[in-house]
Length: 316
Image (cartoon, rainbow, N blue to C red; front, side, top):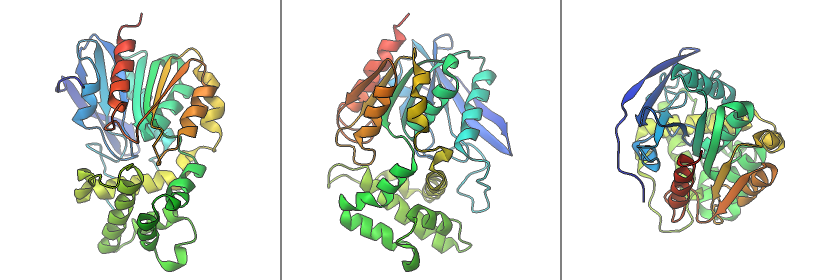
């Protein structure tokens, strides 16, 4: 259902400060409608599959790897990497620096999961620089949702959660599990770090699944990806993305006038539907499409995203 694979016509590394270089690429039509892809995670990086959601004749698609992941440097998977300059506010500044570097005035935002949090935050901060927003697997990163994923969801996946909880020392199992994992992932012992990354990613695989026969994600078989992803997710989650729980919903009124499509799964256990529903209620002009599970690979999700992007491609 997606468009054919395309290659970038330009790419590079953008110096964003604090010793970070952010990888970016552009593909499609250089004179097309600008669109920015915001990947999930944090720490997933942008993969070629994201390019295929866009009509290459209509869009100038910009993809980038957020700080510390993918082809950006330095890697957050390095145990010596300083994560203090890797926050949501740094990423928002990076996005606007990239916009200026590429000479783009306004662009459409397309993101999923963590990318939906980042896209919502960017659009609220710079509504005059956004033409439209398409988000799927809508996730509002809050302390409430961190507690849901790391503790309350044990009621849904009891066996998998018991293994996840057992991955931290006994004295820390009734405290902040995300904090305990973040500490283990920074341990001087490489074996401790590696076990923590495996345990964290095993739980990630569990809570995004809606069927018991789903295969583990192949990306977690890569030790470098596993470590980078686990370190960045725990870093962002233990700080609740540096937002108060009500921030993104309270400021949704700033999105008035920006057309938005929120695509979410009724069976998405990882990110319950109420956040997407509340955001749609608070965002004048937003449309909510609810079906399937967590991720664009579920039936109906990719089709809804393609339909929204195609519609915006034809908008005046």
